[in-house]
Length: 155
Image (tube, rainbow, N blue to C red):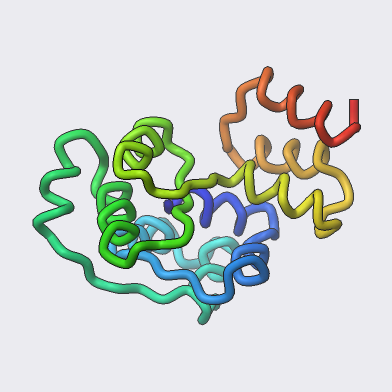
């Protein structure tokens, strides 16, 4: 859950989360992962300034069970989605997405949000936006990128 927040902030698209969902709720570990790597960096300052991101504590027993397969932030994100019966869980990591599907949790990721933003006219070019995302350090499989650009009519 931290990867989408961080990378959206890096490419100047963090506000898409607020636009699409209003307030978002994140567990404490995700917040820590999003904000603990250098408060002077612009993306972290943007995350810290996002008063529509609410941090909550979650049930440690569920997290303990999930920690066998996932990192702490992803385990907390899935546990929070289960506890709150979330309408959508934001995950990019494939192992975390697989685990979330086992619990029948609705998921999307950074690329899914950007595709939605493109379809709604909130970003002018999906290709340029995906290029920015990759430049921010986000790993995007070439075949997936090609598929998305074909769907968007950009290739």
